Image (cartoon, rainbow, N blue to C red; front, top):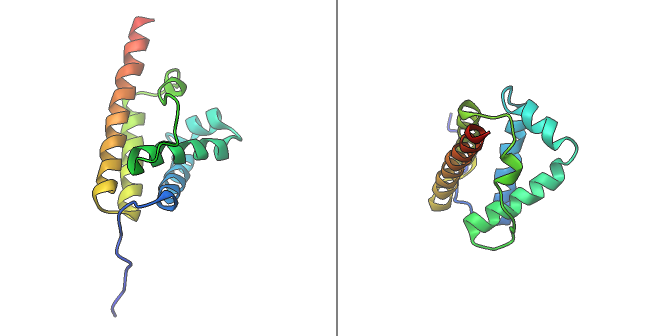
Length: 130
């Protein structure tokens, strides 16, 4: 029996960004570690959050500047540490790998990991100063 699987392609447009963001945050919402944190902070504003994430990743990956703002401040006081970021990176990378492959997919994983490292560093820095 031959199973034909669709070849994964690279992230190319806003529709691909929406697939990435929607699938990733679906996994976040269901995750035992991250779900309770995100759900308690975002509450009933998920559609607003997803729209913001579409713009963020559209700006980062497609170089279509639709995101304006600073992504770190909303995360500064979150009750998170390294194990949360490790899980975030795992879920994000798995989502990218499940749907896409190519230069932009690799950039998404690199950028996500870089952002997680930076956020963790800043959160720990501010906590140590308190």
